Length: 282
Image (cartoon, rainbow, N blue to C red; front, side, top):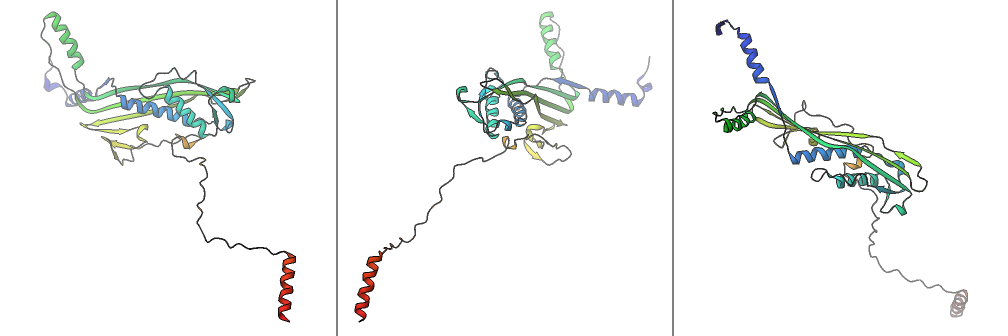
């Protein structure tokens, strides 16, 4: 039999590190964050669409292959269609409410729109799921239930990632000839939360615009910040404020002095006046 004194200290340290650093993954649901990452994924994909080849053309947007998508919360088919209409208008497309008044038809489809989430604990995970199963077994077999172990974490991480995939194409309404296609556009968005020794969450990810936040407060941590280059797409006005064509405002006129009316004299009247002046002079 091996005594505790014969076990090397290094082996004990390795065992403790293995126990403390072992990971455990669980699923976490957060409605607000999930909607943010999903809508940001849609925005990233739509921002990359370039409708400028159809600028100044009368176009009807056929939504029959998009409108049936239910989505989660506000991120549904209405949000997708509204985002696409905004990008078309920003590109100068003349949207028509009826196909009868349009020269071209645009159709679109959604290939993917969803979010995944996972949570990882670095340390000793909670045994609550095992305890629930043991309690159910003990209730049937009349065995004593086991005491639970709370979560003892050095660090914990919770990540959510959303992806959107869309495609658009256009054709002539009368001849049905091909006109334009966008290709498959995929965009991803993320939200990452980190707790260290119970402090947190340190929040970063695409929905935070590459910045780092601590429990909602912005922190300046250059090492953790990320750059979202290329997220604006060919029409940068989609994610930023842009003023297009406003109606011209009338220039205010300042009232001035009334104009003096000048009466024109005919040649005959002018000759008579000259004759009167010559007689008076004699």
